[in-house]
Image (cartoon, rainbow, N blue to C red):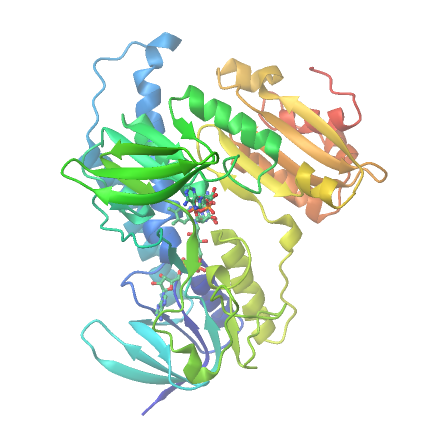
Length: 466
Ligand code: FAD
Ligand code: NAD
């Protein structure tokens, strides 16, 4: 007999699992199908969580090595990479098991297997033992995420030519790593391996790292990373990668047509990710994809089929876990007859390097392009007492406000705990705050958040500590 569900979610990543829990909370009989054998998707298994674990551990290793500068003498500091990796794996296991517990608690039926469409209401599940089950769904949410892209003609072997997944489980610290692409993954994973002892070279096609980021922040970011020892080769296009006995040779051409080869023990290709609809058989349900092979949806996440929806990395928009989660909740509420909503103007982005980089709302470049008059408030962590007290004072806070109304239009931070500080600006923006509202809010002393208040004061040229 075919089991029937009111809602079925295909994919158990941050978009899918959050959506399934919300659907169940709203009283719908819900199932979630996940093929990788554990819940949490890219984010928990091979993305946000393992990368943040390694970023933290490698930063601790780096800090301990330099503690004597701060008057703390330690003995010889040695790296046990195997133990560090086990620590990372433990974090992943605890969190993915945690999601399984949440499914049980919320009565979401969990199917371990690969889901594909048989029709617009039937899904075939193929488990690891090739056992096939068909289920019926009134509503279906596609949350199948994304996968790394490589360069034309180059395949990941995850030993020498790595995607982010391979870069999270290197067994010995490589002497030299070439990172192709200076975006989120390249800079986070490049930082990890640089701190652990690799010579890291970032080869980037464009003029700036992290394209789309406010240029002033992006320039400061690159300056700081260079000081940390990462080498940058900007406006270099990678044309080919050839493996040899020692690793690989990466062939590039710069903007003037000059060719340069880089030898390397390992190469991390981090040039973006693509939507994942492989083996989903969308055609069996008549679902349209767009020109980039993303599932096409309207503003309510509905596909061209009235009972089928899509969210997360597999649709248009930034490929971020919190964007996927918020869409998961919104679509569940829409399916249950409520009015789910995501405010795409206020989605924060954070790069978890040291220092962290965080952004929300419009960049200066975007405001110029839209001919919007704006004021800038800036405050350096060099003048923030907490940052100075702990000798962690690189970077600044930049707030952009409308020239006439003072409404906050964007904020861009580089500095200690930037990824946490962006939260208060997000809330302020969600409530339509002006920079004066932030400036008038009492911030505890001594905290990093005072730099946000001072940047808000500086919009009106009245910062106190600069
Ligand atoms: P996914 O997390 O990709 O989940 C989709 C799931 O669907 C997968 O588990 C897949 O196995 C499953 N699936 C696919 N097809 C089928 C099928 N046919 N049947 C059954 N199951 C299927 N984002 C952040 O916001 N912060 C970060 O710090 C961050 N760090 C990252 C670090 C790295 C190294 C990487 C690679 C990504 C990072 N991201 C980060 C991005 C984040 O991981 C993604 O945006 C997020 O996971 C997208 O969620 P999703 O639910 O749409 O898809
Ligand atoms: P990305 O889009 O962030 O960066 C890719 C970079 O590669 C760009 O700078 C691009 O100009 C460059 N590039 C493209 N082709 C090139 C070539 N042939 N030679 C040299 N450079 C080239 O992509 P990513 O770093 O792979 O990350 C994928 C996505 O995963 C991100 O966009 C982000 O959404 C997500 N992610 C988020 C976080 C986070 O939130 N902290 C961390 C990791 C990943």
